[in-house]
Amino acid sequence: MNHVMTAREINFAYKVRHALNEHVENLPAPTVDRLAAARKAALARKKKNAPTRVLATQGVIAGHAGAFFGQPMSWIGRLGVAAPLLLGAAIFVGMYQSAQQQRISELAEIDAAVLADELPLSAYLDHGFNAYLAKRAE
Image (cartoon, rainbow, N blue to C red; front, side):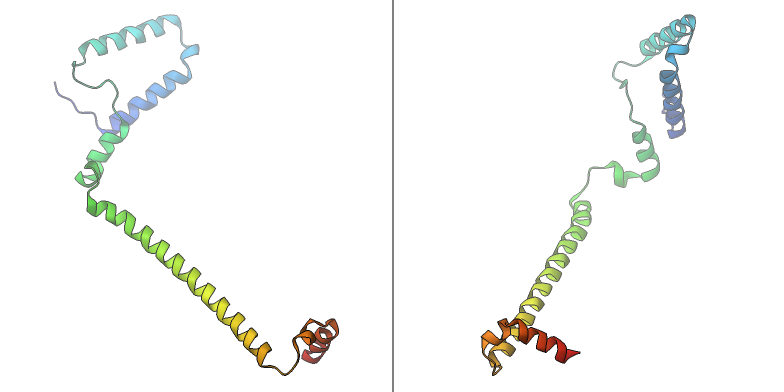
């Protein structure tokens, strides 16, 4: 008999195992003995080349996602993952470079205005002059 477990059966088996593991201390000794005997019988009937453990996701992936996710990723799949990441990094670098260039341009304009002005540079360092400019701007 070649029975393949469905996702629902695998999910049920994990729920039963989880419930048994949670309450194993509360089970009576005869019940624990019967469960141990049932496990031994199941392992004896198991085929030699069949795996003892089966991941629950194997049945779900193979049954619902088709062959696309079941196969190892091809270069197209890897490109589909890497391309958005590379594009995002390139956009981030471009935005950073643009902001830096804008800041440099603003500083250059300020320097050119200061150098082209008729006031000496020491006037800009005088606190009284800064107060005069602030009062004048009001």
